[in-house]
Image (cartoon, rainbow, N blue to C red; front, side):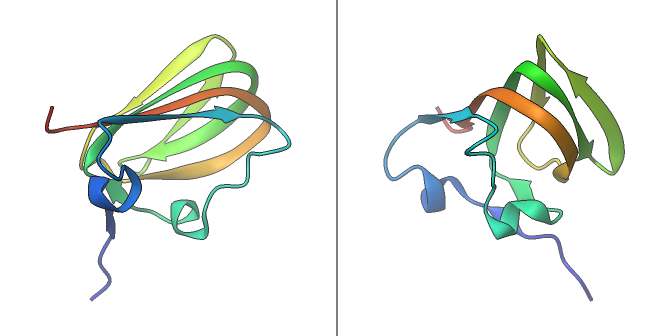
Length: 97
């Protein structure tokens, strides 16, 4: 049986309660694990400043455009569905604060 992996806070946060990352056209290559359906045990917020993209959240495709914020709750299945020139900010927040 296939299962959907869970990315855990302890694997990415190293004692921190939040992490931020700039998303730019030059640096938008996510890890190989993030390209496949997965869950996280932390909150994710993505602010799209420029560009357009798609993300699948709980297997529903969402189109995200400039000046929008995407919120992914802990446990939601998600993965990118493609983007065009997306720039913005990624914020991950530990769910146990």
